Image 1: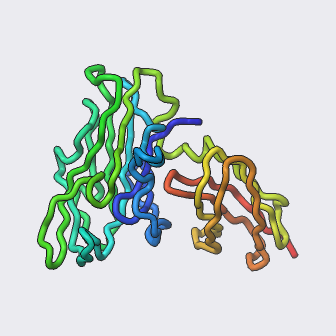
Image 2: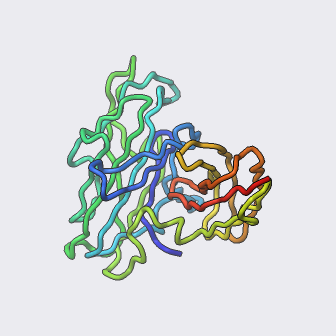
Image 3: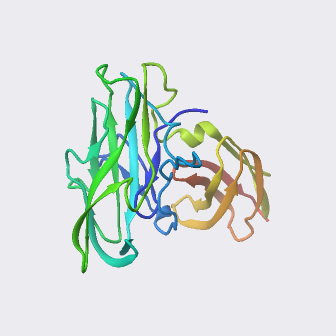
Length: 272
């Protein structure tokens, strides 16, 4: 399976994609703003070997991007007590332990201060130099959390709130198949609908090398959201029916998305 750089959430799961043509470091996908997921993926649980980022290595001499995506909520529970959040922030330099030499990090917003109920992201980006040692680096982010009645306290991720480990594997040059955060689903999920053109109903068919919860959305050509539903996808062949009877004649865009990206296709609604 193609290797990519992982997208994952810090406070309330949300995903972002990197677009090198934009002035900002990373851009949010607002479809995950209401997610109940806390961290995606979870830090590696040593007892179950679930979670972690072992499948997403960096390679010496090759471009690398690792995106941390998050939504700062309006409250947080620390040591069993719930506090109203004011903001979370990291230093603009030196806050990420375990960075490979040649890789730096950047934030959106640029000052790395994330107010409550806002979306943000951090991207680790660069080219690991030959001075790096092949092996595993443990990534830890040092953050400051401000809350009413609590003041400002230091937290790490992973740490007290998000236990576990994020182990970044560094491989020799040529040991990574992909360094793009935008092509993962396109390389690991195929999407089609039949029939197309559609009269009233169509079968959405997927062949996937990834599994989990996804969003299925339909948009008109003006970008207006016409349909949104959660779907669970398993490895292999998947299919579900979509009732398009409420859509007018014309062309629409539908997609399947999760924190790793999105795959989009065109759907034509014919005359009835």
